[in-house]
Amino acid sequence: MRTQIKICGLSNEAAIDAAAKAGATHIGLVHYEKSPRHVSLELATALRMRTPPSLKVVLLLVNAEPELTQKALDMVRPDVVQFHGGETPEWLNLVSQHTDAHIWKALGLKNRQTLINADKYDDVVDMVLYDAPAQTLPGGTGTRVDWSLLTQFEHRIPWGLAGGLTPDNVADALCATRAPLVDVSSGVESAPGVKDMDKIAAFCQAVRAYDKA
Image 1 (cartoon, rainbow, N blue to C red):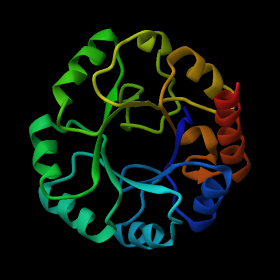
Image 2: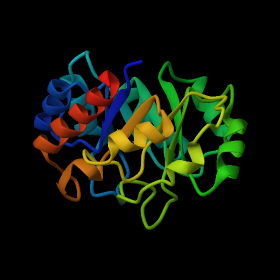
Image 3: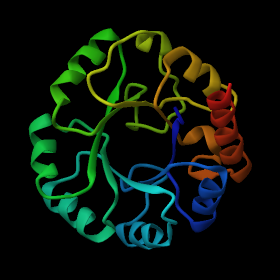
C-alpha cells in the first residue's frame, strides 16, 4: 500500500510546488496565531486555490470558536479540516454536519490508553492523527512519538502518525508502526516555519523507498 504523505505548515507557493513535485499527497495550512506556521485565512484561501489537484489541502485549527470555524471553512474550502486542540466528539460531529470536508482529529499520544480513548471519535472523524503530547504549542515541536505504543495495536479508526518525523527517521517509524499516513512539519524546516525544499524531497523519497522495499 502506498503511504500517504502530509507536509504541514506550508506558507508559500514554492513549498506547495516542492511538496507536489516530491510526491506528497496532502499539504497542511495552519490557521493558529500562536504558531510560527500561521497563515491568515486570506493567504490560506489563496494558497488553496493555487494548490494542484494532486494534493489534498488540510486546514488546521486549534480550539477555534464556532464563528471562526465556519468562516474558515467557507473561505478556504479545504478537503480536510484538522482539529488540533481539545475539541470534543460532540463538537466535531456538529462541524461535520456543516461541511463536506473530511474531519481529522489530532491526539497527543501519551500512552496506550490514548489509543483506547480514541475510540470515542469512531463514527465522528475520518482520521485520528497521533502526535506528540502538546507542549507550549499543540504541534510542530519536533518531539517524537513513542512508536512502540502503536506496535500491533488494532485501530478501529483510520489513523496517521506525526511527531518528530524527519527524512532520516521516517522509514524506521514506518517499519515500527506501519502507519498509513505520515505527517511532517518541523522535520523538513531550516528554521521554525521555514520549509526546506531539499528536506521535503528527501522526506518523500524516504517514504517511497520504504513503500518499494
